[in-house]
Image (cartoon, rainbow, N blue to C red):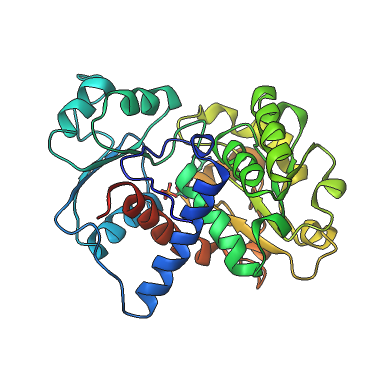
Length: 333
Ligand code: CP
Ligand code: NVA
């Protein structure tokens, strides 16, 4: 089946039908293989791509830049203080300007409402590079990475997300799993579970796709039989630093440790994390949180992060292939 996504925005998972989403996962694999086999076709030749970041990034920026270059496009990167957006110019005006010059616009910022506004006003596709609510280029990468690592179709994959599940990664993985027809477990204290309307929407999707959705604060029930255990930072970009101590207290029982990996009762269970991760004291924030809490490792232990079960760097590489798929599908020729 050929699915045409040309001219479409990429703002959040639910904007795509399960078939459309699966076509992006497949395209990710095709582009990765083509690159590896030296037969990549440059489908973005001569195009111009704007990368607008109101928050910092290592993976997302690099993935967009390298993917664009490999496909023949030029990129213009605007760092968190490098454009007029927000302080002097609205999102609607910004994209109406950029849309006269560029063929596609990536945006990373805070509220999803901003990127949705951009979508309404932009004459060219807008790609969401992360908002507080959604991180769809990451969940696309994760859907592909789980299929690649397990050799299973989305329907046969079981995965758990542990930690702060009411922010972008929790929302995106829940929704992506519902779209892919997977066995999805969101494992978090009640206060950190996804909003009721998002869960209800995932349940409705699950009725169509055959996904199984579990939202629980019970760690043993949540991880039993999982093929993949995901987590994310406990305090996200843009949140008040003052919440670290309380957040660590609330989420410490959900730290991904060797014991948690064993609780899956699946010797082949893999560990995934969108990164960056706090698994040692090699970062400034990690050391500050250690001063506050005495915790040397936060959402994941160093032992799990560095273990054979950890596929976090394969996952990070796949950001590039999946972001390439988004650009090729929406603006490629
Ligand atoms: N996973 C992810 O989005 O990483 P960056 O913040 O480095 O882009
Ligand atoms: N929840 C994290 C994801 C980083 C990729 C954040 O928003 O900071």
